[in-house]
Image (cartoon, rainbow, N blue to C red; front, side, top):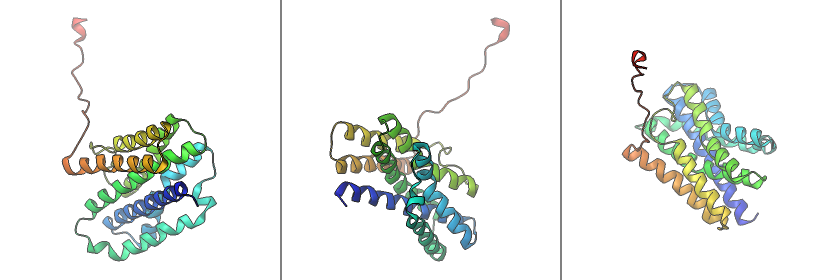
Length: 213
């Protein structure tokens, strides 16, 4: 295995493991049983990559390599027996999710470029890969969705994917682009969690007075 493949696979495993942990942590907050832990961990970890592969019309990664399913299984069992040791599980969930977001941003964009996708495809699927699993997790858990909380989330993935894609297009080594993309996505998300960064929101204005038209 060459260094590029090793880094990409490492980021893939990191993304799956940490997203599985966030899914299991969401189940722990709802005080669910072990089967629900496994379900939440699996769908959170594999949801984004599954959507990516379906849109790219390539074999879904965990169907071709079933051992990917073992990662959320192991993580969910571990969290089931240790989640009570964490004082603020939601805070841990958010920070763990930030790591998964950063890793999967690069993985999604890199795999898209690897199968001949355009730069625009890589940006879009980098964002979808990084965010879709977390959206499913929050909907199933009945938690406020991370993309509706008002702080930066999709923007973090877009910034990381854009960094990776631009550096790749200008000929930077894969390690450089992947590391930079990961760090940009994670640091923007980290700054959001620490300082509450947001984009300007839409504020509705009163409609025109029809009598003055």
